[in-house]
Image (tube, rainbow, N blue to C red; front, side):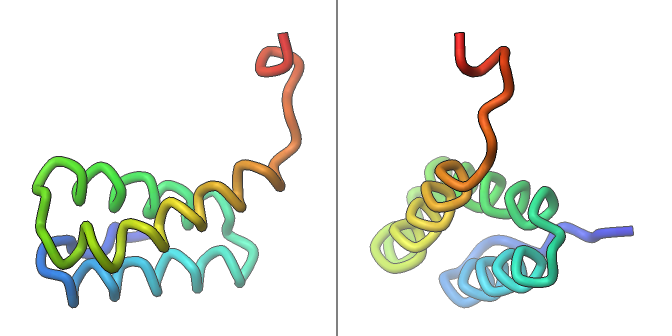
Length: 78
């Protein structure tokens, strides 16, 4: 069972990012991706300044890399 990491301060958000990357590197791409999406949404909703400045760019870059590496299903290609 996977547990969603805590979000909040820049340190918690950085730790959550590191956890997501660790899952991805271990092959659990879907769970790592879901953490990144939740972290992105959390940072956007709270507008925590340091996380917006330092963590969000890394999250967005990681999501972009995952999205370019994932195969396109027929429903996405139409």
